[in-house]
Figure (cartoon, rainbow, N blue to C red):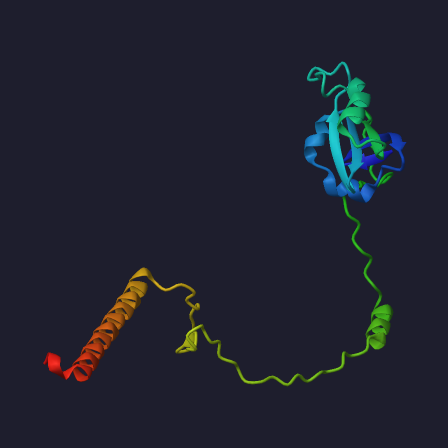
Length: 198
């Protein structure tokens, strides 16, 4: 008999050692309490649980009847997978006869002697000194510090649209002034080379 949540179950079928109490404890849900049978199947190292009713249960339908168990295993489970079938028993287990697998056993407290031995055996970890340099300032693309006045500021990857427009206007004005200067220089050169035109 297996006790699950205070109810007794019988392991009817254990195909390829599919029954694992630890894994069952981790996957079990109280929703399964209402079913007469619990089928657990393994796929990709994961346990899946599904509940089934007995065939004459008032809430039974085609998908939840235990008579459809073979179809469920063939259609919904991995081919050749390990699985198990638990059947809920009508009789309640007597207290103290069986341990409920949903209740985790508390580890036994260690005696004072064994604790003292463990502390003696444990060696202190060696202390390692690490030489650390002073804090390095992060530099952004412009060469300026991204940390100003002790506050972390994100480095601006993109300039704002207005800033780009101002840069473009400044470059445009610079080009205009360069072209004007170039034109004036050419005009002076022409005037110097051709004094009769004046």
